[in-house]
Length: 69
Length: 69
Image (cartoon, rainbow over all chains, first blue to last red; front, side):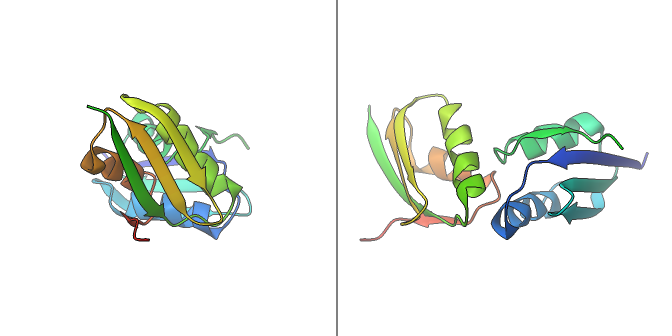
């Protein structure tokens, strides 16, 4: 099943956002993603769960939390 | 056995270096570490191998390579 996972990830520069992009681009099950440095919004589409994406991004050392509008 | 592992890690801002520090502070076997944003030098002391530290830092999404003086 395809999910859309939306998270808030603490990123300060293009080095930060690039690191998150690099990790997502290698993550199994991810079909597409968007990393927005300005809004700190990370959107991931794929056969992945919220939990799986949070765990993966946590390994980057960035603070991650659910996105709230 | 205690090793000292020295690596070059691509970091652009304190968000980048903070992420690396956060990951190392949680890594099993690490006794102490130093992350230098300016020189890109990361020094890790502990009962860990070069390989283990490289693998862990690679998960941050940062480019990592052996340190060469």
